[in-house]
Length: 267
Image 1 (cartoon, helix red, strand yellow):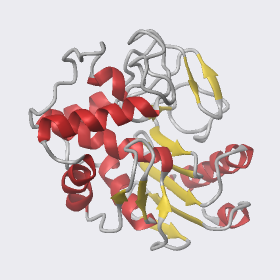
Image 2 (cartoon, one colour; image 1 turned 180 degrees about the horizontal axis):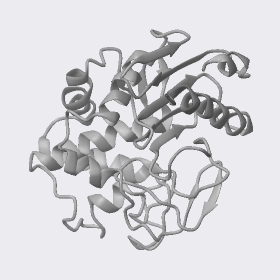
Image 3 (cartoon, helix red, strand yellow; image 1 turned 30 degrees about the vertical axis):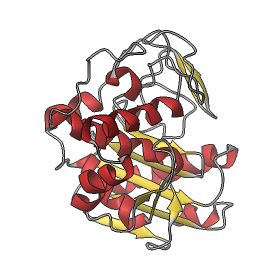
Image 4 (tube, rainbow, N blue to C red; image 1 turned 180 degrees about the vertical axis):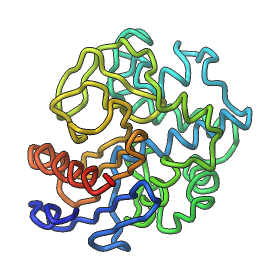
């Protein structure tokens, strides 16, 4: 299952898979700290949804600048990749945005009175036993964690304990599903399905998830060479953390590794 990982053109790589029987298979260093880059957005989204469930935030309440928390989580808030000024109207196009996620963190801070890094730690990291995880900077890209930390988060995505199943079902369903958009570093898609935090595989091709994964597969990748996906049909989670920036190497290596994991999951 992990044979191809050793051939990746990276300095350090750690990978893991959770198979349908719940068994966890790890490869590489489990205690090496990586910056997760945009995989951080999954954890930020989970924290925001916890704030929704406890009544601190409302997914659909209008925000001062227009749109809603739902728009921000689904990259439909009208913000550009970076920069404080909107580049369009909410709900018109899927514009992948770090700014939107930084805005989410600010909203959580405003309603809870807790710095977002501390809220993320208290609401997500500590309950899941992610003792090596910490947010050091932007909520969109600066979670640092080990392989074991991300395995624990992957297990939460696969079988949620922190959120109600109805909330998770919403989070991994297409939001504003007919929107066109671009996945940075990969290309434009019409439509470009996204959930409340997770990217959805849908019919995207070429893609960083394996082609054989179900349309409902969800997850995220990061520009530092990291990814995490869960295929709810196969009941499999797959993740890898590296120290090489995302690029053509990853688009070749990651889907092949994912295909090996899905093959290993078959009876």
